[in-house]
Image 1 (cartoon, rainbow, N blue to C red):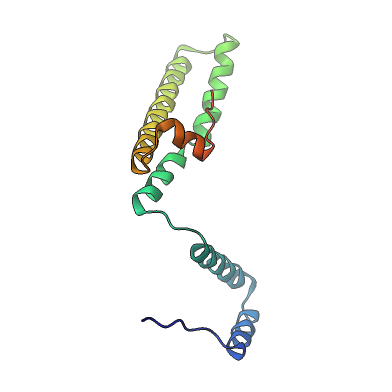
Image 2 (image 1 turned 90 degrees about the vertical axis):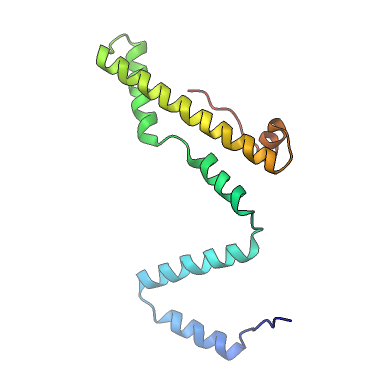
Amino acid sequence: MASVQTLSEPKVEQLLQSVALLGNNELEQFTDRFLALRAHRHAPSLPKREAELFQLINRGVPGEVWQRYDALNDKLHAETITDEEHQELLGLIEQVKQADVERLRHLIELAQLRQLSLDELINQLGLQPTYA
């Protein structure tokens, strides 16, 4: 049987004294790594493929793409868009649609892994549709 090693009070004090000697940048790095380690130990872990799917589902379209889309869409509605900008807008629409298709594909795979319907998974995750 594996044994669990705990730190005695003097060791904890010694560790805290060492941490107190760190510079601000090193203390920030230490704190970030410590909090990540703590969260990892307390959080339930997902199977590897589910974790990968969540990363893919949450990737989304970059903010710069949405900003450009909004700017070109405003020009379209104001009827000041050039032919070149209109083609760019159509390309951005296609890019967003493709990202939505990929996200849906990953959601379907996650639902299958969890043996849920897609609707059940969406409700479970609290996902709401977004409209451009």
